[in-house]
Image 1: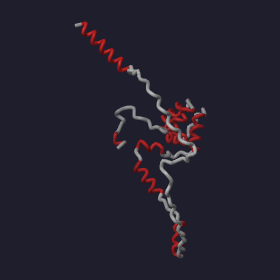
Image 2: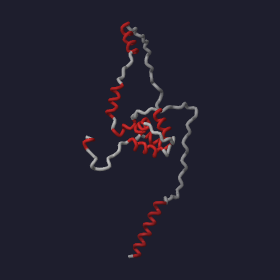
Image 3: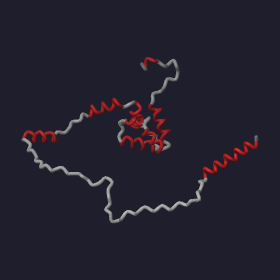
Image 4: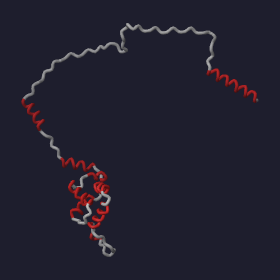
Length: 183
């Protein structure tokens, strides 16, 4: 049994080798003649051939003169400026905005106000005016305050101290709290 298996394996190997190597015949083939070269004197030919495009005949056009009324209408159209109702535009824009996108609207601070806040926070003076507190309350919670605090590290403590002074005192005991004050 083993001899048959070995014999079959040898036959399979020989068949695989015969597929890989072409069998050469003893006859030699005659070399094929090379293709005849294209003569260089022949004009180049195009695959598409020559164009048969015929340009259209030119038609003489004459301008039709406008009447005086048409000229006046055209002039009034050019002179009229389109009126844009900005309040309606702003109202339309507000209707498309979400609460998350409302953070880029102006908070009512001018550059002078921002400069006052920055100089107040950079100075070590303890004088607190109501104007400074109001400006800090406007800036609180905005990216402007975050930028100022990054630039001036000591400003964070000063801002928190000022805002604590500005906030109303909380009731310490439960007995003093009256919900009717807030309703």
